[in-house]
Length: 273
Image 1 (spheres, rainbow, N blue to C red):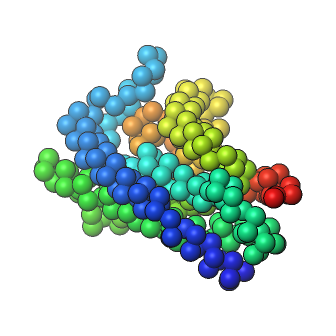
Image 2 (cartoon, rainbow, N blue to C red):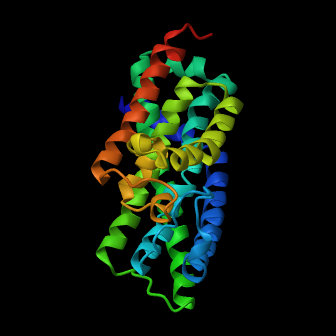
């Protein structure tokens, strides 16, 4: 297992695409943090669901604004680590390295477990960079607007720290998804569509239906936000509330394990040549 972990870790860090995505994520999240900090302070009424019959959400407290901005990566930027995780698995099939990989480690359970565990190191880096990219510019804009940054507030710092954990888990989820859907182009398209369009719409719509409001809390993006205890969608009134932090972590890990198991019983069960 140790040898398999070393091998899979080297595969991660010897490719160039992961750091290109990392730099892109840093720039994107810094931009969003600055914009959102300005909007939530200067024009909070501009945030809405777009649903005509919905009641306007109560304004956020200054502490909620800070937490929301500092955890934006788990709300809007988790697509980067989940894609990195998926690329690590789908790349084996696209570049036809899956055969030598399985010849080197024929125990497919070990191979998949090593792939998922090795992604944690890269996911941790994405978590740290993504979180710092929101905290730095977000705090700067809040300070320029004369608002408190709450950088010494334990609750806010806890949410920011848990954002790193959530983004790390998202990388593991990506590996599990890549094990199930091995076509690299299809995997990236599905992830982009789901994370950027389908789930946000589902959360808004389900949050407006009383009987289904609880279901929206178990969607993967909502579970990732629940880990931090702060949510751009929930705090702005666009979606239902969140699960407890520990429950969000268990749900998101559950998604990773279910996807990996499905991939193991389908893709990795077949003969690969």
